[in-house]
Image (cartoon, rainbow, N blue to C red; front, side, top):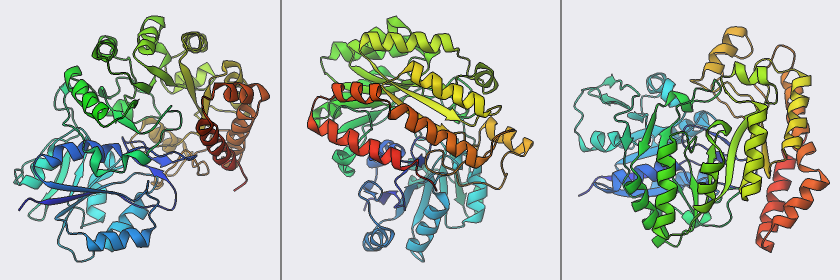
Length: 465
């Protein structure tokens, strides 16, 4: 009999996005794949009988999810968690497993640095995966790890806690085909995708940059073999999927590799529309033109702040001139832009926040996301904020989307930061010019409906708490 493994995205009282080490609450009517579990489904299905339950996308209440789990037979439960919801997640898991003799494995953003502490606090937790692209869980469940350390995995063996080092195992990697059939993949939706269903893919892992507010630079960086990426794309194309979210943290940072991917996609004859993320300092007309030819219709770019002193303080390494240049190029090439802004970074004042709001309107991207600065566990920003007394070392439940700010600046209180965040959202999105341009871009009533629902949900987040 094959070992039975259940992959679980736990229920929640909000729509919690927990994947790829960046957990937060969904600000509107969108929810994407629990990507860590999707990737691991490919590894685990090679040797075990695998099921999946995504209680978030199905909006399953806690009591219903507990009932479903009580009726399922499994030998190992592998669940996704995150700093946004981890205490609720662990309470739920502890309640539903009770005296069941099953192996419990977890992965999630805060576990990268707090895995040992959490395993000590929760004795029912048997293992923690530290790299979503690793096969370490397969080796653990197979019984290959008999007390020796394994990179990218903490686990228990004969009552002892064996700690693994979070470390890249090579400079390149491949992934097995994910088991989309285990997940309700037609229900997932990205906010700026042009269609559904869509597929989530990686062409690389981690990030070579070291922005102080982000965990991505602490993951290391490795590239995925292009032939392996194309194998996955042929698979999802066969499922009828024509939309992609290329989840690279900084697409184009390895220029030759990204160009090779775009050219392979063009040469394949498979037409995909896709969304990705990048930085303005790795984008230029040459690579953007190739991306557009390969089907890229939207690119998310971190602007963060209009204040160059603040940008320097967070090791962002970009300038306003370069930001303006790249956004103009995207518009000329027909690539939509989503600009990310952060209110409340170190050195922020009311004046600098207002400058960022004004710059957002001057930049005039197709979409904009305004969030508050959050001292994410494992980041340099958190260490600095704790040292300066701007946040508490004990704070371990974090959300930068819908929760009140938990980090202040020298001159701005949490309530003032929230007020500025809400002002930014309203001033940017309620401009008549912006609304008119958005309406003109729609191709169907379905797009109008989803945009209206998303916009309404976003504006509701600015209501007084």
